[in-house]
Length: 125
Image (cartoon, rainbow, N blue to C red; front, side, top):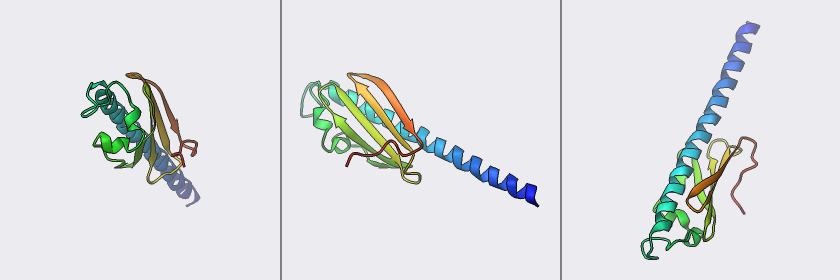
C-alpha cells in the first residue's frame, strides 16, 4: 500500500510539473504572437494604422491598440514597456501565478525570452 501511495504522489507531482511547463510554453507562444503583431504594426508608416516606426504608442493600452486580448488562456499577457525601438511583453499564468514569461524585442528582433517558475516575473505595479 505504501508503494502505491508513493507512486500516486510522484505521478501527481509529474503531472503538475508538466502542466506548469505547458502553461509556460503557451504563454511564450502568445507573447511571440504579440511581438510579431507589434512589429508589423510598428512598420506601418502612418500613425493612424500603425506605429510610424515606433513602439511608443503601445506603452498605454498596447494590447487594445493591436486588437489583442490580455486575458488569454492560460494567462494574462500585457505590453509592460514600449519605447521607440524596444518592447517588453510580460505574461503570467492564471492557475500558477509563479509561472511567468517575459519577451524583450529590440527593433524587429526578439533579443531575450525569460521564463520563471518561482514568481520572479510579475506585472509592474
